[in-house]
Picture 1 (cartoon, rainbow, N blue to C red):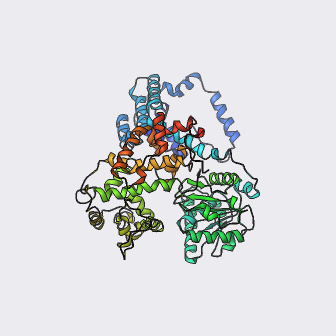
Picture 2: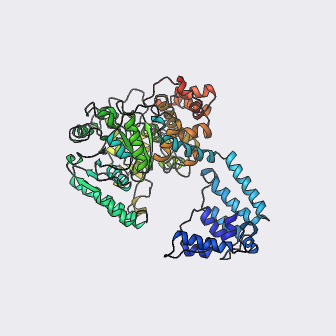
Picture 3: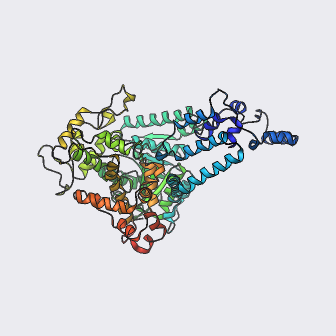
Length: 625
């Protein structure tokens, strides 16, 4: 109610709705935000005294003329009607049901400032709008849930009952000091190095056996830091110091004096074990942290390459790509990882301005394990319902993406950006692929297992690995959207027709909600199983992982919050049972015992943990944390 009276509706919308608060001092004077600007040669105390003296001389009449509650909203300086300005602002905000509820309410409150007859009536209207959001907005509850969940997950709540041994190196790292080593100069390695450099750690030594890859990594780091200077995010003087801390070598022995080493090479267990064997022999400090950025491999197997004394200092530190941008870090505890080590990693993670979530050790940990049913079912929907006139790649992406469920992007576009060869190689390592020469299916593809070779063939036979090859689930043209815009692929349409040929449902369209339920319900169900097994200690941890690591829409609070509040656990259970009956070959549809328990008790999963049912032994498996 006050700001529109001070500077007009146009500028109030800029500040309140669009968050534009970085105007210049001259703009502030012009638009009425400021009374004056200090000169360059004035000190703070001198300015304060000068303006206090000025204020003391104001007459009561002058003071009243400055009271915003006594003013009316001025007409727009460019002649537009104030109501039209609000209507125009509404065109650029999300719909109410897609996270825009609070912004719509804000514009409604601004409108009250000039439509109602007095300041008092405007304040009353604003209070009613606020209370309506506070008590009735599900999105508002989701945002508050995230606020507290983030602080809980990064506070070391999981570590409070763990015995901690003192660490000389750890005390330095907690203060933001220490030598850092990063092994692997690829996309992940260079992003991890940037994260540590920006936080003031140093020296940061990047190691890669490929000299060309190492040079490319260093060049990327330099370009990124210089780019942040141009954008005003880092002062030029600080950037110089950051870049002075960058070291590089193709010889791993250069990491001998490091306090913390993050291995970030490609997902190959044999290679990672070889690296940790070398680190075991060359790193001088016995309490140095030796961490792996693995996204799915067994941390205990990696730690087995170390001497028994060192294993307590080994854990997973799973960054998300691009590592210098994404906020999430999964801190993976192995069997031998000490509580002190986890505590140090969480402190370091917060030092580099990221959110740590401690998770247990299993295939894919939390985030990627839940992604398996998400990506698998997305592809299987095409094999079941695709073909002429049926479900398309874009249908699935649109249902789950920003204009559907609200994910940042849909599953097929995600895969194209990350590289379809990654999923292909994981399926090959798991023994699921068919031998294209003999036609024999992979040894670990069980009889009756629901599986489609659609994603395998597109990579193996057609080289459709994603944006880097200008073809994946979609086509990409370097002349359209800088090669990033997803374009329909006639080749993929034919491939889907081939793989859906024997499905009784081929050529069938599904509604947006049907797609969302088929793809996201098994993802949530996997979250319940993760809680059952003690891989995560609280449903809010899973929500934070999906919010910051996978683009889950904040206004829906995370997968577990969504299940509790948007879907309802009874409906979730009934739908999963129906899907499992339809598709018994997909075990991810088999309902979790924890989900059944919550439904039997008549509580949501958040309430189940808050009331202490989990701590009382209602779930039988022992925590992996």
